[in-house]
Image 1 (cartoon, rainbow, N blue to C red):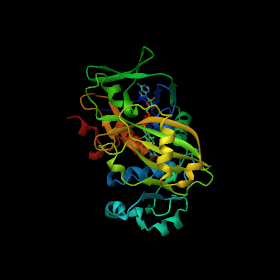
Image 2 (cartoon, helix red, strand yellow; image 1 turned 30 degrees about the horizontal axis):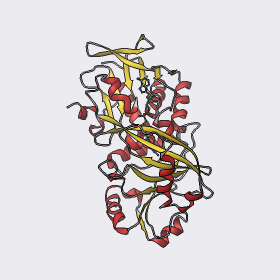
Image 3 (spheres, rainbow, N blue to C red; image 1 turned 90 degrees about the vertical axis):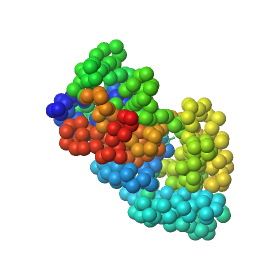
Image 4 (cartoon, protein in one colour; image 1 turned 120 degrees about the horizontal axis):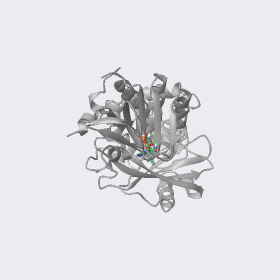
Amino acid sequence: MSAPADVAIIGGGIVGCAAAAFLAEAGVSVDLYEGEEVAAAASGRNSGSVQHPFDPVLRDLHLETLGHYRELADFDLPEEPVGVVMLARERAVLEPSVAEVARDCPELVPALLEPDELRTVEPAVRPGLWGCRLETGYPVRPAAATRAFAKRAYAAGARFHEGETAWPWVIGARARGVLAAGVRRPAGAVLVAAGPWTPEVIDPTRAWRPIVPVWGVVAEIEMEKPPRHVLEEAGVEAVGAGGPASIFSLVAGDGQVVSVGSTFLAEQPDAPPWAPILRRAGERFVPGLRRAKVMGVRACPRPQSVDGRPLVGEVPGQEGLWMAAGHGPWGISTGPASARIAVDALLGKGEIPAPLSVARASG
Ligand SMILES: Cc1cc2nc3c(=O)[nH]c(=O)nc-3n(C[C@H](O)[C@H](O)[C@H](O)COP(=O)(O)OP(=O)(O)OC[C@H]3O[C@@H](n4cnc5c(N)ncnc54)[C@H](O)[C@@H]3O)c2cc1C
C-alpha cells in the first residue's frame, strides 16, 4: 500500500497533536478533529510530571519523548530532572521497589533514604518517613506539551477542527475518511488518538474495550514552601486492584501552586468533594499542606490498557484505520514517541514494536 497523501486524526490530546505535527512535517495533508478543544482531556489536566515509567518497554518511549521535548519550540522542559521521591512509613515497603528498579531501570539510580537523610534531601516531608529517590521527574505545565505540538502542527499546515466530534467512515472494512458534523470528509487514512474514547470511536457497539477510562482527580493547592521533588506514595501498583481508590502524589510547578493527586476510579467522580480528601491524605506525608489553600480541582480519565502499554498500529481487519492510545498514567511522558512510531508505520517507514502493537488486542 502506498503512503496516504492525506490523513484525518481523531483526538486533540498529546498523541493526536504530536502525530499531526510529524505527519504535516512529512508533507502529508492533515485534518485533526477534536470534539472539544486541544488538550481538553487528560492531556491538559494531568499532574504535569514528565517521568520515567519504571517499565523497560516504555523506557525507550520516554527517552525518545524527552528528545522530542528538547527540540519542541514554545515548551520548557527543565534541563535536569528534579527527582522523584517515593515515600513510605516503613523501610520494608520500599525495599522491594528499590531492588526492582535497580534491576530493571538502573539509570534511575535508586537511593534508599533513611528518615534523617530524607529530611535533608526534602525538608517538606513529615519526620519519620522513609524515601527512595529516583533520578527522573521534569515538572511541566499540564497542557504545555500538547499545545506546543498543536502549534507546530498548525505551522506545518495541519488543519484543526475543534468542537467537531468525528467518527471513522468505513465501507467494506476500509476507512474512507471521517464523518464529522454530519458530513463525509474523505481521507487516505484515519488515525484515532482519542485517549480512553478510542475503543468506542473504532467500535461504537462497545464490544471491543482494550482500553478503559481510569478517572483521576487532582487538587491544585497553593503552598508557602512547595517541596523540591515530585513526591509519590509507594504502592501505586495496589491501586484499583481492590486496594485504595487514591494514592498521594505531589508535583510542584514553577510557582507555589502544586498538583496533589490522585484517584484511580472506574466511574466519573464528582470532583470537588475529593479536594479536601486529597489534601488530608497529603498531610500524612507533607505537613505543610494543612495550612495550604485549595485553588481548584480537576478530573479526567486516563486511557488504561490491559497491560499498561499503549496500543499502536492499523486496527486488525480495518484497512486504513489506525490507532495510538492507551498510555494510562504515562501519556505526557511517552505519548509523542508512540505518535512518531504510528506515523512512521502509517507512512511505510517503520514497524510497530510487538509489545506496543494493536495486534495484541485483537483476540
Ligand atoms: C489525574 C491525571 C494525572 C496524570 N498525570 C500524568 C503525569 O504527571 N505524567 C504523565 O506522563 N501522564 C500523566 N497522566 C496521563 C496522561 O495525561 C494521559 O496518558 C495522556 O494525556 C493521554 O493522552 P491522549 O492523547 O492519548 O488522550 P486524551 O488526552 O484523552 O485526548 C483524547 C482527545 O480525544 C477527544 N475525542 C474523543 N473522542 C472524540 C471524537 N469522537 N471526535 C473528536 N475528538 C474526540 C477528546 O475530547 C480528547 O481531547 C495523568 C492522567 C490523569 C488523569
